[in-house]
Length: 66
Image (cartoon, rainbow, N blue to C red; front, top):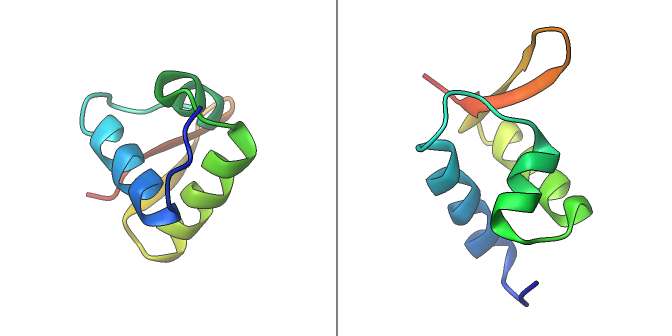
């Protein structure tokens, strides 16, 4: 795990979401090798900023806002 800023983490999340249709927070944390709690916080901020959205399909997923 690395010491990156919130903005850097959010950019890494957005870049990762460009490579998948939808994913779960824990899978993003694993793919980026970052702490899940930090990824959860960054994802919440991205959702508030309107850059990503939550999908509820037999579980909670995230995707880039279209």
